[in-house]
Image 1: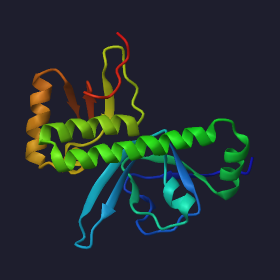
Image 2: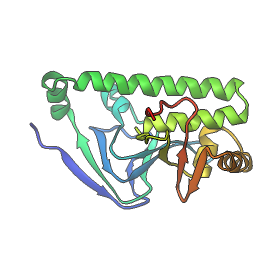
Image 3: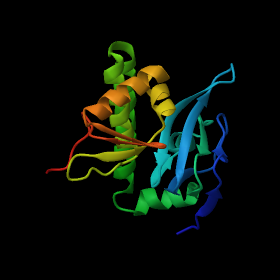
Length: 201
């Protein structure tokens, strides 16, 4: 198999910028990345916070278009760049690779549609719950026997994803914590999800 390129990123270091044309897509082996969209006013909106292992940058690579977001490390991270030759080999000769990518695209598209629908029609509480459920899918967070999954997300990041104020997000999380559905930590949330599939108890 053609060699893959390995990169290590310090916290705060950019893997690729918004508008950049990439020659590869990436496997985040370990660490965490923030995916953000910048606006012309200089502000940025958080799309997602990924925890390894996870794939990213595939759409820009496959379509040969500039990336629609920036990927920035939020902790020391290791990534592998998968360029044209490894991609062709995996697609043509690795059983199941293409199906796995199709599933990833489908889950991502479904999650975006759910968030879009929630942003237009649902109250803040439903948008926040949906944002956590979508994060659980994106991060492939394992669910324990009691139905809990741990997600890498800050309260500010969750507020941005759900389109809810930070004050409203904080109040909802505290209420969920009192009801025993959320455990809050620094940069993470344990979530007994509403729609996310739970393990059998």
